[in-house]
Image (cartoon, rainbow, N blue to C red; front, side):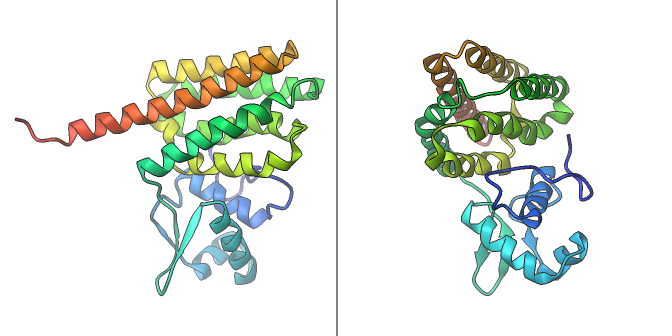
Length: 233
């Protein structure tokens, strides 16, 4: 499920997201606009077939959710996140998202469950090949989004979505090992099972485990990267 310029833009957050914002985010997720890359208004407007006005409006929205940043006298670029920021985001998610997810229990429809099953299988397909793992992120967010949009915790929905976006931008799925991917996919299956059982506590526990597992995988990846960069004694 790679994101191209002609593809349907990914759905993040609520309906106030503009189509242009979603299309730019799609380019970031696909790697067409990698972290740290500069984005020129004129070039992007031509690429998306719109005027510069909606591009500027999209930039303001994307700055607010941490996708891009404005550098004075330089321009706009895709934001990069350091290890400390990613850990803070994971820990914030671990506090908020399990509650929001649990408040969707008993509110999901038959169509929701059908979509969850399809998305879970799609993630497994993408996970089976390391070359396609970077594409899991947008499918993963669609999966979580079904729970979140159905949540009774309406006041926390936008915050929950916004905390998910930097993880997508950081492209962490592409670094997962086979065992990491299997664990993550199993959590998705268990979330569906908890929802079918209408067990809020089970769903919240699985959600928190899922997020903390992601954090621990990220920390292990950073530790491995650091040790590889150290000179031989």
